[in-house]
Length: 104
Image (tube, rainbow, N blue to C red):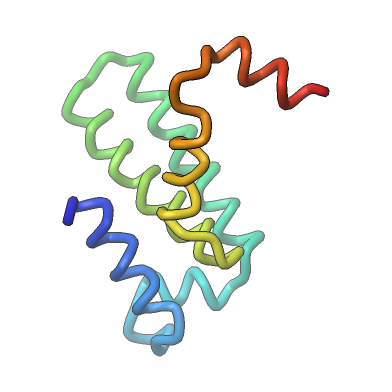
């Protein structure tokens, strides 16, 4: 099991936890919109670090992005497995081919 799988499992387990004892539960209790907002904030921070070129800070921000992405997905009852299935569906197709298929 990868670190990402373990993180996804932890987020799923915290979904019904007490918001006073878990940051994840607190985010989820605030609803999908707040989870999406936090994901957006972390994404911007990662972009800033990518532009600056600080590898250590970018690594840290990328970890925050992945965490908040998984929380946002959980807020809408989606899982890492759902995203992996979509990636598997796209595997072997060019990005251009995939994009054109979605625009039809």
